[in-house]
Image 1 (cartoon, helix red, strand yellow):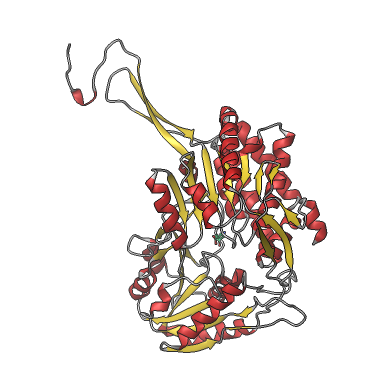
Image 2 (tube, rainbow, N blue to C red):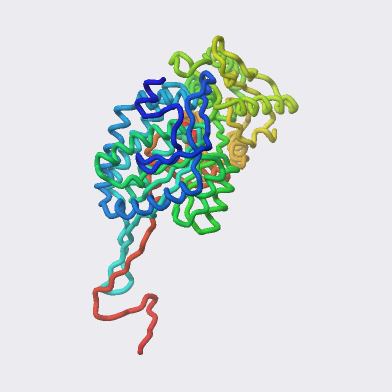
Length: 507
Ligand code: UN1
């Protein structure tokens, strides 16, 4: 681990405010502990208000130069960053795994997601297209173009400590913006590693350091960012409670937001499903990343005709799960992020016990021999009534609720009857069921899959969801439009001044 930390120039005590490679230190610190073994990784200083003001000032100066470069020139910078990420994929993936607790496989997968979005953004830098329209007035031309916004503030969560930042920065940068990143207080070290790599690219290209900034701290630091008039867009990933506060702060000053908040994702298994793949998808969706993805499968809706068969196969699959250090690639499940998350997991199970339920797999906290971390749990599966209020809440832990259904309409109703609307999945080989689920009468989520689980989206599609998930879209498709402002241009190349709608105004 020491070798990896030194690769990214991380010491035992680090500044937490960065303007490119320029570091600003302070007295107050956050300590990052690894949930893998409970050991301290390093300290990071908390950004002060003065330092925050300097960051805003430097970011504004940098944005002027950055936005004057052409989009393909900015794409070239992102291409160089993608190449560095390729070179450091294993090191950064290992650090993600150690600081966050996800499996090394998934840590590397996260860095791969960063590489993919860099590639996507490079292509995009030549495709920031606007439309042309036919004007109703003779000898007039109408078109629209997309301009940079300015400064983009990124608030990211612990569960995808690097990929979600890159979804935002890679697009924001090619669109001509500079970025200020406030990573989760639970995973500041991986953020410093990403910043170190990007500052190398800035330096090699003699670019202003303020193109990429990092600030560190809790809610207070986050509020400086969300309430600052110079920050044109806030892209925030995290809980619905956080998003509600951020959304209100930014709306007060008419800033823009992209909110990617809680999910409460259901996987429906039809009587016409390929049960083997449905089992695989359910287990990966429910226990992958120890149930800490916003796309994790939290509810399993199973058709009554195959219920008994499916549940016994599910029990068998859970019995084969290996829990332990995520750095050991033979383990399927690593720890939860911290002891508070374990507490929440245990509290939720205690609450399930107070309602009508059947234990399919008992969830409990566990200890791993020779490991002093208290963050490991055995995932739980509970059959509950369809109107159990616990099933309406997102708990960031590997707890799966199972509900039996009779008709697809009923399953879709149960699936949609929650406040969140991120991801959804139906396993079926029946064309009618599949098309119905994807129609407007089907899933109300931002993501709806057939014969694929709820988690593990590719970067090429727009990522995000409806209702309390916040409505934002990040990553692929035309999500880039959220990082730009649209301008409609009308050019009159005649010698007359005809008014639209045929209005006459003679003087
Ligand atoms: C998140 O949990 O915030 O679709 C993002 C997935 C990942 C991204 C999850 N590609 O599961």
